[in-house]
Length: 99
Image 1 (tube, one colour):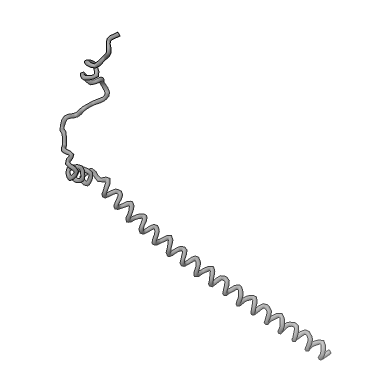
Image 2 (tube, rainbow, N blue to C red; image 1 turned 90 degrees about the vertical axis):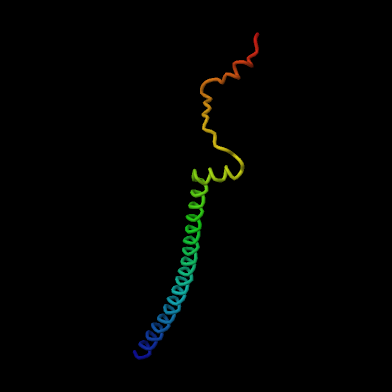
């Protein structure tokens, strides 16, 4: 009877050791995956911040005042004359070929 009890105790102790090792392995894997998740999450936040900065730069560069100032620096001038292409221009009428 005592021998049977000793075998059961030894088996339970061995099982406890195996389960403890499995638990350590699982915790180690979870820790590694967690570190990877944090690293990826930090990278995503950094890219989102850069993306927001670029959006602001694009919005600033495409503002009317910025475009006007750059065009003047390239030598373009403001012309208040409005030309509409909805109706044919008089020049186009004068250059028509007669059949």
